[in-house]
Amino acid sequence: MAMIDKVKIRLGISDDSQDLLLAELIEDAASLYFRRRYPVTPVPDDMPLSKQEESWVVRATVEIYGKLGVEGQTYDNENGKNRGWETGTISRSLLQEITPVAGVYS
Image (tube, rainbow, N blue to C red):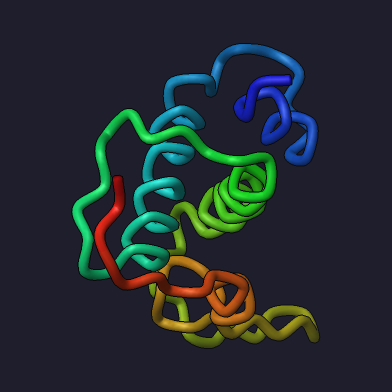
């Protein structure tokens, strides 16, 4: 199953109306993954993702999608519900799943 389909399932999206947006968010999440995983080594644009990496990208994409329109929000209290997000695009807990690798990729 394609990553975009996995994202749509998690978000409850059943049509194709947001496919361009989701594809862009998936690309952003994959880029964030690779920058965190390989902080000192350039990564080719066509580098494939393992199943584990795809899972991370899908979860990160869902997080990014959920923050659209309220990026950078640090706190909100509305009707007894509190929201407070970290300043980054992706939550700290999700980022901590990535172990950085330093060295030459071949």
